[in-house]
Length: 310
Length: 307
Image: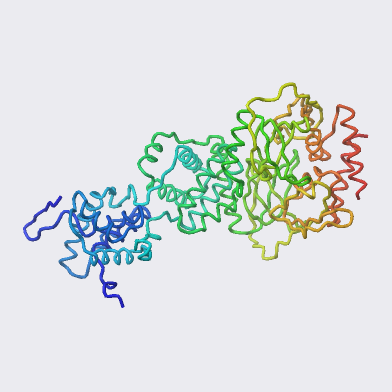
């Protein structure tokens, strides 16, 4: 290792051994806490160094590392008298401007990405946050994340169940009845008004359902087989909507039957009448239910009850 | 006083100073050489040789530094980050969405962030990265390449905070709005210009793809933007399960009839109307009178559809 370059006047070492040794001590401390004896032994058995280093010299190196921006503490003698590297200048440091840019980008992505990709991104950002020395990045990301506060592992499991259309039993914190076990056949995860829901078929109510993911405590059981012969009654409705076709955002259970000028005839199928009703009401005066008659009457009576509240 | 506390190695300080600079991103030769320069003329002349010595030290230690056009780039770091294939996929997804950023500065900050991470990847993660194809997020990029200029134009308006005259279409009708720009918001994969209208004291979210023109006026609005506060009540399961929006508040107390009062600020009235309609007779607007009338009219007109 000891090579030299020569010019006419001065001879320089090709490398700085002192700097090299300080790098070695630093990397040793990065791995784990070290005592004087550990460091002495390491230097003595090092392939290139192979030298005995004194405690005083180690002290000088440690002082130098502290001056270079490392925070080092020492455990009590009874605990082995080991040096611990608390922090150092090379950890990931994200500036305020970078944080602003990334949060802006993620805010946009959270409204545009599919749930699978959102989970990937959330997991990645949480990992990066945990490796950053200041907390501002973590706080900023948590503030804008649509998955903030949700357990990633649970989300991944729910997503898998949806992809495989599995039948599961969930522990759910219901606002009405407290902790309840619910059995559903999973369909998909999706957002509605910035809240994440799991959509599926409820075996307790024999209809399609959607549950707020942040109320799901746990997946208690994943059934190996799905129940057969489910007696699920599906409602098909038809309604007209006064809208520009380009502005129309159809749900997965909806399809366009006819377009006449600005009136679009839409057919929607669902076993969840409540969800259908909510959808119709949200369209307000732009929407009229055509059929079936009983559903039409239900909407009219709901509207009358709404009006009566005023 | 501890005797040895005062003693330190100059070589150690220098190499860490150098690494610290390089860790912050690409570093100019002048900044690096300054570490090794001193007042002494002879030492100044030797600085490039000393720099080489330190570069060799790092290389032998396993830290690679490349130099291009007088700029040094740190290729790997002490602090190694281990990312699995899914995390690398997320990194690529992020890289593929760079076009969403509209200004040069934002793109620079983004590149620095990515560089900060990639530089710290361990060798296994680097291998995965080189074998993973960048997800170009085509659908999003297509939208942003179409509306990117308009988004940055609107961001500029928001920053300058001058009054705007925005013309836009909605349900095939044309509207004009004198307003104050607030921010760009994203709803259902679309960008909106969020504005405040002083006359109606309402917030409007104008879809960017429906904007016909924007005229910037020389006036800067200094008046306070106090939006109309909508107070509404909800009951039954809806009230039990309701989660307040960021812009809402409630004392959480149910009245004798089981109603919970919600105070709402800053929500686009069109969106709020749609939302409250969904809550059917489990919701009623208390104030202001104008919004209460609007709800009543919406219900009446919807009922008329069935006559």
